[in-house]
Length: 160
Image (cartoon, rainbow, N blue to C red; front, side, top):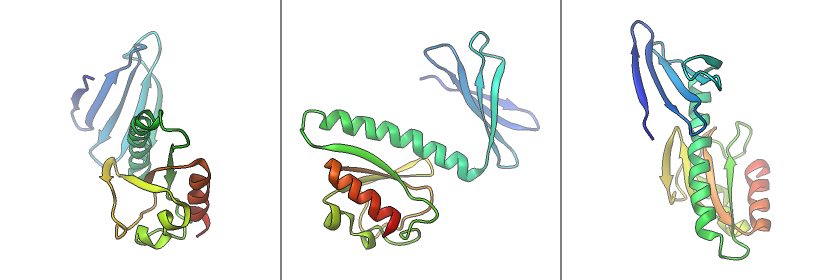
């Protein structure tokens, strides 16, 4: 995938690419530290159809969601031929009892049989996270287990 970068004098940097459908999608990273997501119109890749300002946290969460989806899809593909194995993503919300706590405190593996195989954080992947990795709001946990175990893990992360 070819990503174009364009310096916007006095504003920041525009980074974008053209999708298979011909639409241009990208971000403008403003000098003040803000980010703006944009999508072009269908008929003209240089005309903006939608522009969405994002806070740093929102941009990070979006990056986690998109990156986490890619990891989850690859894991699902790898486990497709193994009956009963499912891959799911869990977002750590601000009201989770495990925010700013070591992941091991949740005892996900012991209590549900589910394995946390990666954490997406601020666009970066933490592969095979150890129990002492501290969970933060916006973290996206990529988990593998049975459907029942994943439902249990979701409940644990939400309610303790």
